[in-house]
Length: 246
Length: 277
Image (tube, rainbow over all chains, first blue to last red; front, side):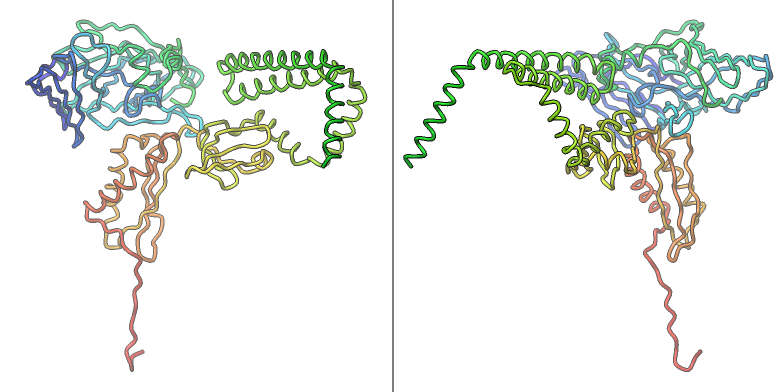
């Protein structure tokens, strides 16, 4: 199958599921970016941009930027761990897609999802955490984002893990132009006394390159938050405590 | 007419005389008043500017206003002192007047105390979407005496603080998610299972409908004219109304497309024929 990621120039066409992207160059040399997804159409004139690059998007923009600050990764089927046991797994999910200028990609031109972006509450509806729900990858030509997760049960009792919740800033995405595959740094989950400590690990892959990242200023306007709030939002806590259920 | 002019001139003379005698004091009073006003205003601005960084905006505003009023009162006392007015007598008189005023202004005091308790308890804050005393809207100001709410139709409502404090307050912004619920009637001829599938599909395709807590669609009642389906799903609290509007419309179109009838109220009428029981 043809890879979804990589550079994309006027005259060529990009398609996945019911989403298509066109780049049309007019007589004056302006490039028009058009995306059609499920009957909807998004259009933008690009000034000073001759080609774009398609890559995975950090999962912090869709469905509504600024509304959530965490990611909810379902572990299905759930994992049962005896005391002292550990497991390393790859959570395969479907990433969002971002389009940025091939050169000087400081601001994303477009961000979209190939499946309906959804959210979930981690914890109770009263005081729970609103998180972006990442669908489990199920093939079908969709792009795949693999998240390596190591879970250790340091408790005296067996535990069942059905989800991993972490701040959006914990995931650094790496991708390969010309492919459909992307992966992130490792995530560590340590279970003890009925709660789990989630920490961000290093990226240990090979041959993949980091996705272009937006500037803080660009992120600020896109999230609709003040700069101070965005900086706070992007501040990585050393440990996220999953204390509202495993 | 003439006598009125004479009285005016005499009084003017008296005022003029008083002014001549007390002009240094008047000047000192004006300087004192300006000093306290300017100093109080600057301190108010500084308190507000730095306060908003660490405490909520409305509380910072109240504290800074209180500081300003404190300096205003100081200015009044200083001016009275300049004119050698004995404050002891005033304080005694003030105490007596305070008791009288206290009885006369119980409601005001009650509102004031309720305002203070509202700040301490903080069941609501500025900007919160609420329903208080049957008024639904957004809080725009919590003052010392009253709370102002702009209702959803854009009308400003002023509610005394004691009413707000003792009322049932529904604050729609304090939870992470809110449930949306519809009761949808489908025809008795319709396939209930299909209808449930169609509705669940619509909900699953709506980004604002949460995956967890999950949606529910179930038969809740056999109505007079329709089978009533209860549809429940959760949406992020800030987007609850958007989700409610969007999904209901999509359900209507989806049910139409699936050939599931939403019936009008019906009544079966039996006509009795002559000679038959």
